[in-house]
Image (tube, rainbow, N blue to C red; front, side):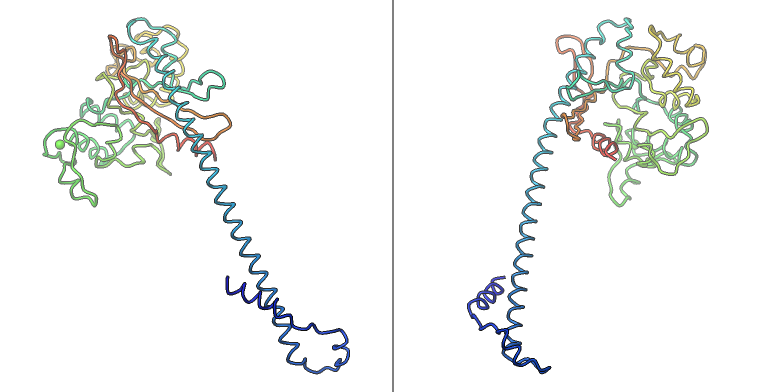
Length: 370
Ligand SMILES: [Ca+2]
């Protein structure tokens, strides 16, 4: 660029004599221009080009600068929004915790309507303009992956419409993952199998730490775990359900709390038609005073029905609290999640698990932005 500037300056400083109009008139015959005139015209063209190049250069520099300033500004803005969203989410978490502790579980046996609604699997908005919302999910309403036995596990996969041989692979591999020994079942997998994978690891040989650990187990695909396989068809009377929705490691019970269990969990446990389970969940919301016989009748079975032996009826004591914060006039949303166990005494509660940045938040936001 310096070279071009030099050329330009030289062209200006040289001050070549301009051709006069008379000159042209004198030699109007169609002959070649004298050499000096051609040289002059060429040099002027060069000056013009140089000026144009300088303009382009300045334009690019200015554009680049403005774009980077704009990016920086929007990044700073987004960061500010996200920080605000995070603290709003924390506020939502505290609020949800307060609501939960207000009802839990000192008054066991008291079956208040408010408590049931708290676990209706819907988001509750904070006060108007607060910018947060929260949701409480009873972990007791899901199936404890560390406690369920082999027979029930098999029947769950059958109810989900998973066919052989995958069903047996899943059951055997989950049991192998949990049991302390390294002897694998016929279709199971122990460390020797996992060691032979491209990215090798060992079997846990102990209880699952999180539900996500299922993803390490042989046969469990992300589609199966999240329930989002494309082009999959739902089994008859069933639905595509992700294992993530069904299982928990935090449930305090061997059985599932019928008071808060989702339609998917009831369907997976009992094999009752998915539509019917959804109807049951809707009807359950309307019942003001619930008891186990009421609910069982609603589900269409007497107390003698063996399928219903999978359930208990209790106040939630271990809950997962999800809270989302979103500053006003912003599209940024932050989500936090914590699993809280109600405890007696002074402490009143204990945080079993804390997820500072819940992945679902980003997924949900991008989904809603579409
Ligand atoms: Ca094992």
